[in-house]
Length: 107
Image 1 (cartoon, rainbow, N blue to C red):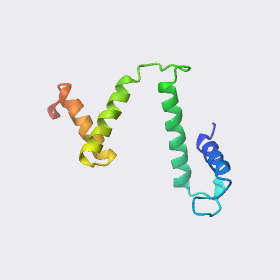
Image 2: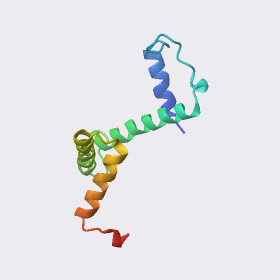
Image 3: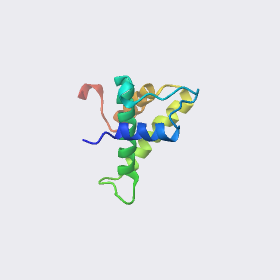
């Protein structure tokens, strides 16, 4: 399996010429904490998924419009209320659930 996070990290390290923003040496991939490596993997996978959803070249298998609109709603709640992502996501999911006719009695 391709290690996209490592590929992204190595490119970042190359572009930064092996030096962090404060002048320290960027560690090797193997020296990174497992949590940091996982974060690079998650970030790389997010970019890959975004590309798959939005690229006219690849063409999404389903319309990305509902996802884009949903993300816009979450961002709007964050902007208007100062909530973090998880809180805003919960609010938007609840509103969508209620608008779709759902109720907690259905759960």
